[in-house]
Image (tube, rainbow, N blue to C red; front, top):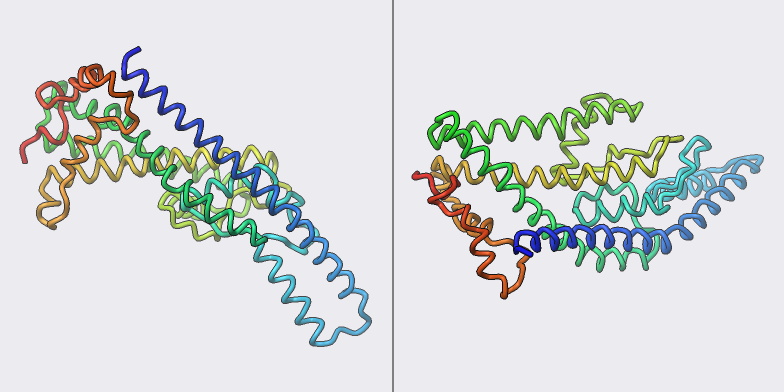
Length: 314
């Protein structure tokens, strides 16, 4: 088996382990937090009944009632009868929370209620955040050859563009595809599914999400009576991961284009030459015994045989 296949098998294993890690986190969060959430719901319901049974409401009882309601709302528990009956800590919601935690999006609409959940979040993110960055980097590394070097080489050989123009056209097309595929089209879908979202709200959500800002003022799947809520949450997770991968790909392509056009030298920023060597050597190694095969498989990336940002004279 060639090193290329081994590298892809290892990358697939990394992705499967990443999914398993998310599922493990979702199970733990659901096990820890759901009983605490159920108790909080019962306490709020009892408080509501006591408040309604009072013949005369005084200022102290009103303030106590409002304080408890606002505190419960902070943790995603509503006292309103038309609120979503689904738990914030069922398996799908816990999986969604774990995903936003390790991707550093962190909407903040759902937070751990217990001290145990907060402590587990620290250790879970401590391992999950760098592992997420590793998986994203490994995926982008594979896509760079398909989405970057191939199109630039085609523009130069088939269309006859000069190196500067070829890289500029490539980046413009890549940016257009990402804007349409990960902002405009998802915004149309979100604005259709979420009744209270306008198209601008949906665009705003996509931007805040894929930039990992995660303000939490718009969170999908939280409206009462949401159809197929679990499937919807998982679909948003897939969109988040693929979208972050594409954003990372755009940023790396822009860095290299800026390096080629002299912008990094003008602003005295680091060049991306060292990233070229990184792209030639897979993050996931196949093993020392396959070193010759790795070198052989990397030959198409040699400057003499394939176009890359490092081969173009500035």
